[in-house]
Structures are given as C-alpha cells and as structure tokens.
Length: 263
Ligand code: IPE
Ligand code: IPE
Ligand code: MG
Image 1 (cartoon, rainbow, N blue to C red):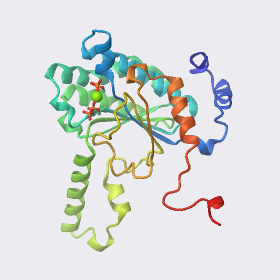
Image 2 (image 1 turned 60 degrees about the horizontal axis):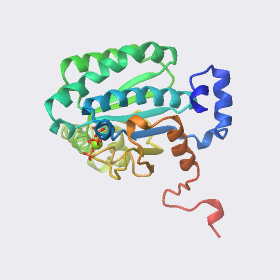
Image 3 (image 1 turned 60 degrees about the vertical axis):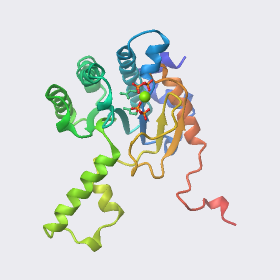
C-alpha cells in the first residue's frame, strides 16, 4: 500500500504523513543515518556475485531517498564505503567506486526535481579521480537546492575524521589562531566533516549486525539506535516507517529527566 502513495504530489505527501501517523513534526527525525549492510549476503542467498547485491542496494538508496524526501526528513546520511572497505577484493572495490556514477546518472533528474542536495563526507582525495569527478559535479549542481540533504559517507571512517580534526585544531593552535583553553566540545564538532549538519536523531543498521563499524562515533553520542535483520537490498519504505515509529516511542533524556519524571 505504501509503495503506491510514495512519490506523489506535494498535496498527497501531506496526507501520506497523516496516514503514517506522522502529523506531529516534532517526532519526525531531522537527520537519519543508515549503515547500509547486507548486500553481500543478499547476493549470496541468491547464488549471485556480491556486486549484484551492491547493485540492488543502489536501488534501495533511491527508494529510501525518495521516501525520506516525501516525509520531510532534512538529512539522510548513508554509509556507502568505509575507510576499512579497501580491504575487500579489488574487483569489489572497483565496482563500489563506480556506483556513485551509476546512481547519479539515473537519479540526477529526479534529484533536481525534488530539490535534493547531494553531499559527501570522507577522504575524497583517496577516491579514484572518476569517482571524485562525479561526486564533485553532483555536489556543485545541487549546491543551491534547499530540500533533503543526501549525504554519502564515502571512504569515511570516524577515527580518521577525528584524527584529521585534531591535526587541524593543532595547526590553528600552533599558528596562534586558537587558544587551548577555549577548546570545548563545540570546537571538536566544528572541525568534523559534519560541522554543517545536525547530529543524527536516528541511526539504522541493517543485516543483523549490531556494531558501529567506525561510523560517526562523536556524532552518535545521543542518537537513538535501531537495528533490523533485514538486508539492505530488502529494506523498503515499510521498514523505514517501522524504524521511525520505534523512534517516536523512545524517551530521549540526554542524561536528564523529562517533566513528568520529576517528582
Ligand atoms: C554493505 O554490504 C555495503 C558495503 C559495506 C559497501 P556488505 O557488502 O557489507 O554486505 P555483507 O555484510 O557482506 O552481507
Ligand atoms: C560497514 O559495513 C560499512 C558500510 C556499510 C559502508 P561493513 O560490512 O564494512 O562492516 P563490518 O566489516 O561488518 O564491521
Ligand atoms: Mg557488511
């Protein structure tokens, strides 16, 4: 049923929110981050090569980006390639490096139509030149779009990100531009690749793995986690709604107490 109502006009999108019990805007996560896992296992179950799972996973990215846009989510961060994924066979790495081009080629008209802004975080310089070029082009073309931010974590590793931030901070300190005593949590936040983004409200990991695999260690300090056994290529609008409904039932305390809990 859901499938039929996603991707419809603005007017219908409103009713979609209502149908999904999402009328209270406060309860819609602004930023959802997803560790898209299980492509290889999806392919293996079908006796297909692992890359077939990545291809299918790319279709899920499109589906979920549309859905996030329809729901009025502000930022969707997708873990597409980790700094550790270079350990995989070259043929698989090569395929993964070609996916942004495949994805953007087919999805770009809709990205523009939907006013989606493409961004990426990760060590871009270490990506093949062709991958860098397509990502740069997409970011440039969509930089004035004011809708959903579709943020790809590509060659991203949280520890590498923190090391880079520390080095950048040290440089500023050594130049005399930054005083050590003035360094606080917001300084670190501002030197990370997510400095322009709100922290994720909801983290989803698919495929039954219950770990972070070096993803946004700083930024996830107070994020709500939701895990599913569903493999990424099988993840769909319903699964996303399940995660959002679960999120809405959470009680985010940030270390404090909520009004009714104080006696
Ligand atoms: C996630 O699927 C995609 C990437 C990590 C690039 P996997 O390729 O990790 O799939 P599994 O975990 O082997 O099933
Ligand atoms: C995490 O998945 C990275 C991405 C989804 C891009 P992995 O499949 O690489 O994680 P591990 O190896 O199971 O921890
Ligand atoms: Mg995996």
